[in-house]
Figure 1: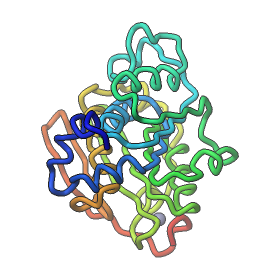
Figure 2: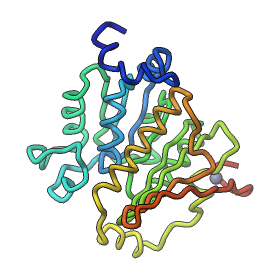
Figure 3: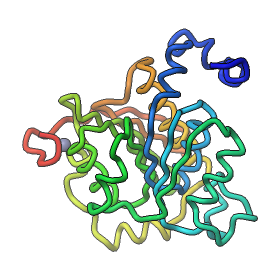
Length: 247
Ligand SMILES: [Zn+2]
């Protein structure tokens, strides 16, 4: 690291759990962020600021006016732009040292192997069951750890699924797809912006911890946040012995 990098990352390097070696590990890591919406906005900001070496961003949406209430990576001037290109432009203004590549595409079974190839960590910032279920399956097939985040109105949750450990996966927790009507309604029911920020920050925190081996990861437990009642809760989750994804 040169002197400007040492200065940029000084407050992380000062942490004994990260130090110079942890900062080097961050610089030598490739993360794939699937979804550049609300969770992606926040997680990407912190991961780029933290100096993760390579980040690829996958999303096929364009920035729309109703996104700006919580997707803080985007500005009014980005309206109508593809999210991945606007995200890359804004993130490089924060930290030009990070290598950012983009996939202007929906994450699918067909393109999944090409996208996550060489990733050290996947972060799921998508907003629907079908994508989350697919991302989990692909992560386990390729044995790449996955940080999951989910949102609903005032609440959110976060968890780490590690295929290298005998631990629970997304499919263990949610083995059945929700009724289509229920899922569509959740989008219509709204979402409070700051909860997105809390969960996106927790996901970035788990990512930094995982990469630097700091602290204890949220494995086999799920952390939930309820903004309306000001409550954090932690639940144990159990691996299903008959789970078709992780067993
Ligand atoms: Zn499972």
